Length: 106
Image (cartoon, rainbow, N blue to C red; front, side):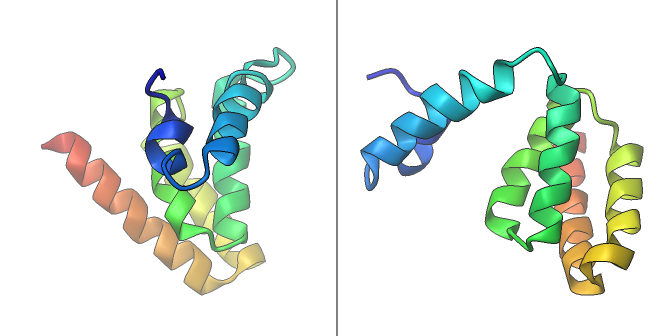
């Protein structure tokens, strides 16, 4: 079986969920032309911050950077969201972004 994000992450414990993640979410939804991958990344990061989904946020902060969202845009998004989602959500996201940016600088 081909190594894919879903299969690498959860394929050993939930093969069907991994398959749906790879084949529906990433191969279909993320490829729809109505939104760019950059815009999808920004929307996904905002949703994950708002829902306090720190486990998934690391992956999507990195993906957002790969998809053309700048560090400055992510910082501003997190700051903006603090007023709508709560300080703990934003502070957690800011710390995760710092770690990701530090890892990319080294």
